[in-house]
Structure formats: C-alpha cells, structure tokens
Length: 466
Image (cartoon, rainbow, N blue to C red; front, side, top):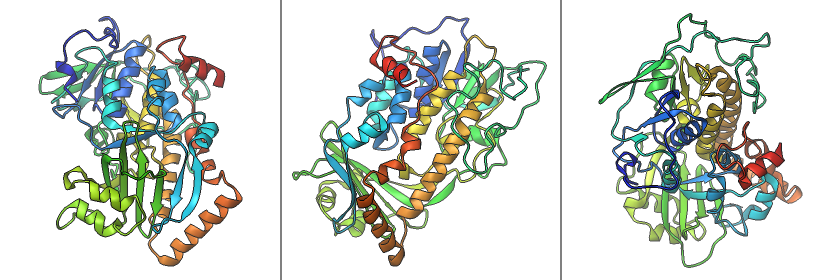
C-alpha cells in the first residue's frame, strides 16, 4: 500500500476537509481502528490528522475476520456493504480433530440468519486501503513518530444527577452493554475533577507540535500513549501461546472451512474472495521461542500429520510467507479508556487473544462509538461516556476470549478427550450451541445511524433494526 500522504490526482471517493473552524482530532496509529476512527470523525465534521510511525501503510498481519457487529459499525461510515460483498464462505464448515473427525458443523446460511449478516474474511491490506480512500488527501502522515506531550483538559462538564454527561448525544448510555461481573456499569471510569480552564491536548512529532481538541491513541498493544496516561498499569501479558499466520494459494482439492483443535495446538483454514486461503495456527509454548531452522519447518513438525488440506497447504507455503508472533493481551482492564482529551482505542485499550476473532472488530466498534460521543459542536468530546459505553463490553469479550483460549489450548490428554466429547455430544443435541455463545458478541449494533449516504441500504437496515 502506498503512502497516503503522497498520493496525487482526483479521487471521487475522497471528500474535502472540514473548514478551519472545525475542531481538530489527531489519531496516533494508522491501523484498522485508527483509520476507522479517522473516517468516522471526518464524517462527523472534525479536521483529522493521522500520524503513523511506519513509512507506509503496509499492514501487520495477513487476514482479518469481520463479524456482523463490525460490519454494522462499518455501515456507519458507508463501508459495510462494500466489505460484505467480499464474503467467500459458502456451504458448511466447523470444528475438527487432528484426525479429521468433525466435532461440530454449521453453514454460512445459518450464521448469516442468526447474526443478521455474514462472516467476512479479507486481507488486512484490502480493509486499510478502503478506509484510507475515504479520507481527504494528506490526512495520513507516514514516517511520523508521535509522542503525547500533554493529554489536555476538557474543562468543566455539566453532569446530571444520575452521573450522565448532559451533552452526551442520545444520552451517555446509548449503545451501552451490560457490565460484566465485577464491573459496575456507571462507575467504571474515575471521575476527573473539573478544571476552570479547558486546555487542548498536544502531540509532538519530528515536524513540530500539534494541538487538538481530541487525540485518539490507536497505537497498538504496546501503546506508549497508554503508558503516559496510566503509568501504574502493568501493561500486556503473555497469553500462553504463539501464533502463525499465512496467506497462500488454495489447494487443488476443495475443502470445507474449519478450525482443528489438538492438544495445545490449533489450526484454521479459511477461504478468501480472491481465491487465496488464510491459514493460521497456534501452539501453547513458552514465550520468545523461534524455530531452529524456519517457521514452515516448525509447522510441518507440529501439523504435518494432521488431516488434509493442512499438509497440502504446508507443502505449498514458502518459509518467508509464514508470520509468527507471541500472543499478548491486557490481562488487567484499564481503569478507563480515556484521560483528559485522549481516548484509547483497540489494542491500546483492551488487547485480547484472537480466539474469538474480535480484536479488530472491537477496534472498529470503538471507533464509531467514539465518533458518536464526539459532537463537533461541543467544546470537548464526551470521553467519559465513551468509556462507560465501551469498557464493560470490551472487558467482557476479552474475558471470554481468554476463557476460550484456555479451552482450546488444553494439553492434558484426559481434558482434551473430555472437551472434544462434550462438544460433539452437545452439538448433536443442540445444533446451534456453538453459534449461541457468540450471540452477545455478533448481535451488537451501533448507537447511531450511518453518517454517509443517508438513503443507503445500510441506513435502511440500521433503521429497521431499531
């Protein structure tokens, strides 16, 4: 992907920047969450600048799975149907053992019917390109290292008797999920004492300092901004397993999309619209390990004797196509997803294991909820309402992802046999059981109607769901 700040020429899908009287937002990080936030804030009427430390917008990772909850969030910025058109899963799929026995099966139609839309697997680069194309020329600045110099202060905020900010559009509780056990729904964020003098946030870059009414920290799991805002937080912890990802040509023989669970091992094979296959694997191993030769050879040692098409895929992949990375997560939830005029978003706020496929999805949700609470006519975004809406939901999903990872990565043979037997028996008795556990995740809906294309099918679909 080319550097957006250096593209030239007329682009019909780009809109103009808001006028100089519009409030300013600086987004740190041009990943999926950061670019989604940038597009949503731009459509809301903010003047947005995106700072990316890398020299280009090349994605980190291979593919991403978008569930109906994230697709509804993308409807808000007019991108949902464009991404739905990339859905490739047709027919059945499910969960298997290393020998190939099916533990549970489902099909694409059942998923779409239950959750109101498909699961879409696509290249991360494709999503980044389509998000960046919706921003005005010059919005994204690559090779721009950003440091939070001052989180700013929104100044006094009128608060109603129930604790809700009076300027929150639609009420601070709009779109709020129930709090998970141990989290009170209304007191999750510390109350910041009002300041008599509002102060803008300041971000330092090699080119100089930027002032903004809002800073969005989408700088990833090792977020430096998070460390500035919450210096006493322990930061990310190892989730107990490492992961491999790759995109490769489809095998000659057809296959049903699947995940396969072994003893402390996982493999997944999923088709993509362009005819390629996204494959991923995981193993419960100590952190920091690397193969003595190459990662393809390591995968052959771990998965080479498993059912087809896994050996065929490993025969087709080159060592340089295999990405490996230890999985980390935010084990201790942050006390808030904001401080001052700075909002944390995505992995910077709530990094979770990929076992539910929700990391990027939750970042997209964050982005549109943040824009919902960022009224450009107000003197400051209602970030307390953003925290109240997002912290309970993301904490609950992160905990579910951790629990799922523990079940998948069981290593003791008796526990694995018990797990597999329970899944097989319950899936036959209650065919929708595996999908039912995803209801509260995929069923989420954004608190606002789409900003783009007021007469679009996406808006009609959102309005009918209300």
